[in-house]
Image (cartoon, rainbow, N blue to C red; front, side):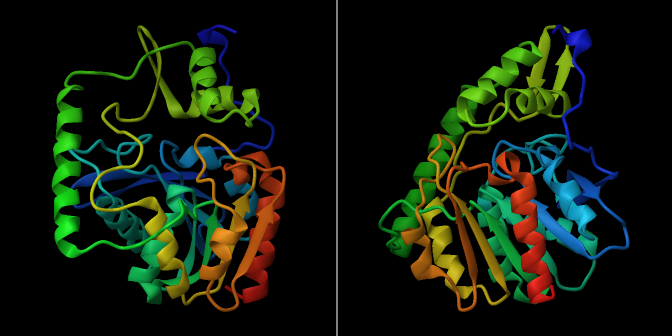
Length: 308
């Protein structure tokens, strides 16, 4: 298939019903919505190096269940603005800005991978804004999760900032490597080997842009996995016991390059009272893409049970 024949189609995929922008301290975020605009809102955060339209199969299933699904391209991803630097705190501020644009009352928080951890932190920071929390394989654990002293945090921040600035200096004027749709899909497939190749080709059509020398993913080339600052992914698990809203955690048990390697035994001691937790055999990190109907069914049943 050549570029001219590249079509944005995939069984069950539906592009957002509405698009809008939200200002987050001067940075423009591209927001996507599926479902009736008058339906109860469900704010859904994508994972790192993804974008809102990676939800084009999963979000419509939730919308068919009666929800207004609201997601956004995180800074540096998709059609949102690029930033001078990236941090966990900035992503939290962006999430709060999107939440404020939805309305003042409590809503359902949900997220996948980094987005799951992000919404867990937001639920801790804004407990009055969350009616229920759904975490899709966003429970990172890498063994010991001991904290560090405040002076060590300061040293960590300095080291991380210096390393990040050194990294950025090497990328001045750089652009992401171009390729054909098939080449971009193949690159993504090396990180997501369990996903349908047809889905990956579809993803190029909604998540990449074409220029004279080929297609490029709409991801800031200065970004790298992990962000920066005195924050470790596994610390997110320490936020879990403090979640006061009804909680559903879904964990894929097949190990993947982009996954956390978390096992049920890592999660169970941290679950808040009354939490629901489902571990899926034969499913990898992208639970909502590998088995969208199954996972959407789990989410819809949970939200109905807790009356979110």
